[in-house]
Image (cartoon, rainbow over all chains, first blue to last red; front, side, top):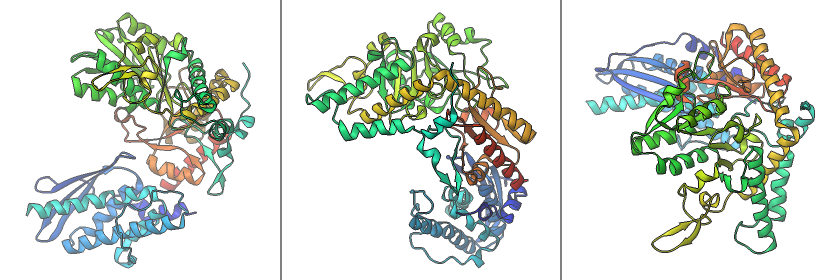
Length: 169
Length: 411
């Protein structure tokens, strides 16, 4: 059985207690996306500005559990100032870290949760945790399937924000 | 009144013998769903092994037996809540939610016109809120709300004024978040004086308190089987016979008609009028066994035990956790049920529940299907621990140990 230490790594608790890039950018010009987890009432508000194929700025607001809030904070630190291509790649890598393990959990039956994977990352590929840096601290979340949606909440909002920014150009 | 012997009772519930993460299960989620005693499971097994047939149709022996068991369950469940005429006044539904929707869709659509007022409370579970919001959207009825004070009790100071012109009052007998046991008899008396009917959501009260519809004076009472030691998939609506007789069908189909032609139908008498399709027969048998179990223990004893445990929990939380753990709702007393909504400083309810799971403690994080109340309390969620007749002080001690660990982890 996974330990709590797998879930609540020190980096996660640090980002929960002291979230980075906290607040909201003025919208417009920033794109503003709200993400909700109806199960637990968590919400995250991502505001972002894109300049020349670069994620010029991002801020995070909202309230929720340590996993949703630290994931949002870690995400903001990882993507701020990056090229959009690199941001997209990181989103894919992060979400495959969440879904690869989800599929693994489903097959060993140890999770006791019959819900299985939600279809994302249908072709599991090895995730290079090196590329994820501090974000790799969130890999323990996948041992707690109920919490995966907490971790991906802000990433889905970011992904949606990039789509909106692309459509607006 | 005999005291409840919790050690003996615990042996009747197979799930309590289970271990999770190498620790014995501490089940504190009875407000969401209760565990089943072996007698309920055995009654359902016996029904499927020896009797199973569809009800109200066949003439063969097992079909007659199934009908007899199903109708006997109706009487048992009705008597359990003090129904004067259980054969005619108890409608089996899927759960309390469906029972409340039945009232809104059948009684409500027949009796409420645009501009008519329905008085609810801001503490209602979505099940006694959304059906009325749907009706408000559909036909422009007006919803008004009783509010709560700082202890989570309904503010009834201006009840008579708020009742003026109201057609129906909808109120939970006991809050699933605050544990407040609302003064239904007082509300019903005032409502009737103002010409309004009362629909009570008994999902949390029927499993935990002695309930008598005659004493409460309400007109409708909805409750769920699985919260009162029965199986999922069955609930009940008790309503005054005269009201049911004047209500149109809710769902249409087999079993609810007297006659059908290609251009019209004649509905059956209540309660069959409201039970379209094959009903939950095995579940009714299981619910009947659950009622028998609760009556064997005695609802006075159940209530006394749960109040004692609630008082123990509130005092122990205060003593061992101090200001770091807030519990919503009134202090332990005659109007307090065994629902403890916790707000632990610096620990999100979802994280608290996760840590508690490591202690094999089952609690529920979230909004508990009472989002307006969450907003009123100024939180997005709480972690809710709720007691049943099979819980003891040890369960509370493990809960508090887990909360302390969560506080330490997130400090």
